[in-house]
Image: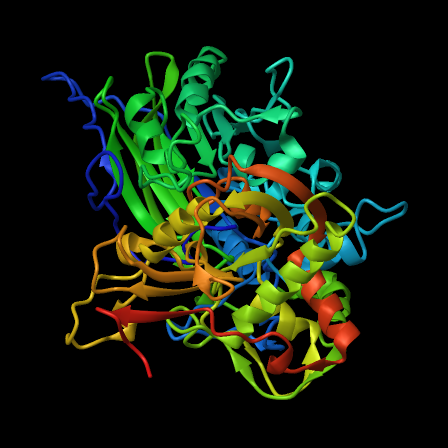
Length: 601
């Protein structure tokens, strides 16, 4: 599950260590000796372009709306647009003076990527070439880092995707669980031909997110380990310098904020890019990923050398292209970096590259046909528009499906007599299932992540603590104060996907109270919840493995799990019913109150 969709930070950003400044980082040229003409030094300039968090966006197309993508900011998406920008820069700079890299999260995120992982999988005998591999190969990437979402479909799918690439997939801190040796290529060194007969060696080190150990535990536990970024950068950067690297660039699937979403479950920082720049000497620039934010240029001073490291993050979904410009000078028998600057280019300024359009139109058309299949009929329109602050039937649908699947899975076990509770989050604020025909794309827009289902054993006390933690999502609002729904949620910048409904119990959330004291009238089957009672808790794998740092659930006993996506289970449920009627799934489980009075009528 990705982090926040985006956070526009302008042309500079000062998150993490170091200060944000504008302009290039420059070292003054040496002064000529008096009485002698200045000696002309050899110079060379090259450009590194970067993308990140592509999440399967090839074209500027919204598969959930079956229309061209649009938003209020006028953004455009897709590798086809990025390709046009890349070709323009190569024409300006010279192809041999440019590199193109990516910072991960490539093969998950749209119905396109789901289709080629599950419907027509690339792992099948004589299976297709992944459209993201086709596009990136055609554009001519030089390297890409592993993202955490690369592991969502299992290691076999990832390895098949890796085999289809014509460039290395890098992950220095993705190591074999037994030998602790790199399981993926840690780095690549590219030689840049200069006019002076002296090549520039550019090392690209790939680092990924340690949270993979939590988020995709089912696939990687006992197979791979993911040490911290700072630790592994400190190991590899000196090696790269000793191998003759003149320039060291890190492609890091890790944000720059210094924060983590997993509490104290791991000894590493999730968004560690700025810390790596500050703590590890010898790095010239970092392409930042994972956080889905826009950082045109962030300058971080290395604590040991005093040198400045340039960071940039090009948002996500191929909406931006990062451009790092390097100026080098030949001195003392080697190339030295004299200055580095970065900026972002907007893909909404260019048209699609017809080469990419032609290459992938057939794959795109297949997916459009797939998501527009009708699987049922809705008796009324369902929407997530106000689902984050009102108990919405559309979220009850998720909980109903999950509870039904888990109940059926446990019916022949010793846990069959326990009541089943379920959690679900209001992932989207714009999802809608219109009255009439219900398609796969309607249901996919409701559940946009490829999460799977897990059953945990929880006590009443743990459920109470879970709900209190979830209720921290709301901004404390005094009784009688004006309620602005746009400012009511996301307290502490908590994303919508880390707020949960829980079905099977009823409760009030008193937002006039301080966080930690908000859950009131918590009842099961009409009676006050017994803290000692046992429940089966149906949760998605992200939450079950500790995503969002909800208390109790990650350490609770696991009773059952499966690899089928929750999205697929919803489609199966609707298909079997034929009719999507709120009478079959809607329930009023919770409401917001202030000092006992409902916030909404």
